[in-house]
Image (cartoon, helix red, strand yellow):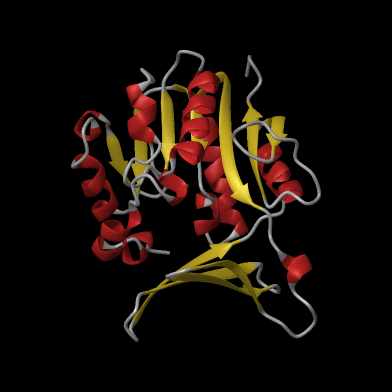
Length: 247
């Protein structure tokens, strides 16, 4: 899949929403704080670094950050930010691209592993994280929990967002474990803008098995970056996987 066709210049231009949504301080702050602690003074590698939503403030905390991303327009937005030019970025697929050096932390936030549309690619992503990590290093994945319990028989879509000016729908293909997120934005006119992104959803247990295949063990799982307990009703999770100290 060519993610650059999805995350093109138009998508990159509309991605950043300073101070709101996933850029809100109460959302972004805890993520940066937790990742800084997990890096334990070492260097971090972000898969799908995008416009640097997390990488820029994390680097501002003194953590050396490198990125991998397949979308040049998203990386151009990163380069335009204060501190962005100092962050090295490799253009390539997060499942296969190689960044120089060894890291104590690799992280993948905001559901991005689901942009890989096959199980094989997702397993390959875990193995790529393991290749970049020093012994004892951590791989952190932030991911949503599929909402299949909200799908009655015969229904193929769920509403995940409904606020003034924006509606979000997810349409499910349960046979292939695929979902397409539809983001509708509109104003007082009759015109609406639609952005769609395909995903392969992953259950937490399947994610754990992918980790095992790459040599990781699950260190912790919480419902959010503030370490809230993960329960059967949690809509998402932050999972921390760790390599053995000696390999």
